[in-house]
Length: 111
Image 1 (cartoon, helix red, strand yellow):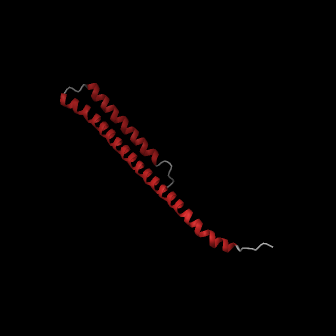
Image 2: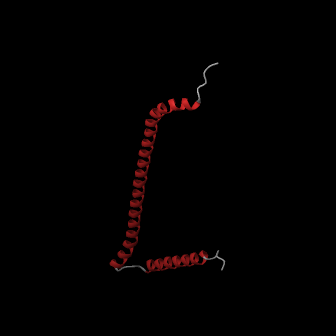
Image 3: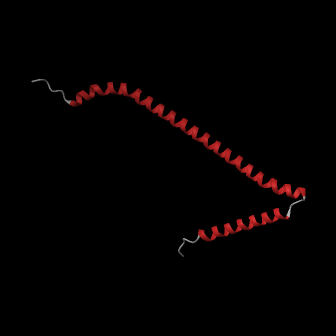
């Protein structure tokens, strides 16, 4: 009969060898993972900053476009009656839309 080696003795001999081999491998995997996560975070942060900058530029362009025509008519002093009528109509339309939005916002609530 062959001699029987208890499994715990095999574990006692093999575990230090496995530890020596696996520790550097696991360390490398963890180090690479952390590096990748940091790079992804950095890229996401830069992308967010770029989007924020783009949104700020667009907001500045829109506000400049809205201010420029109004100042141009006032500065020139030759605003035509049609232009004034169009401006008043657009304001009235905007107010109508705003009031519709206000009335429909609370429509689904049960009191």
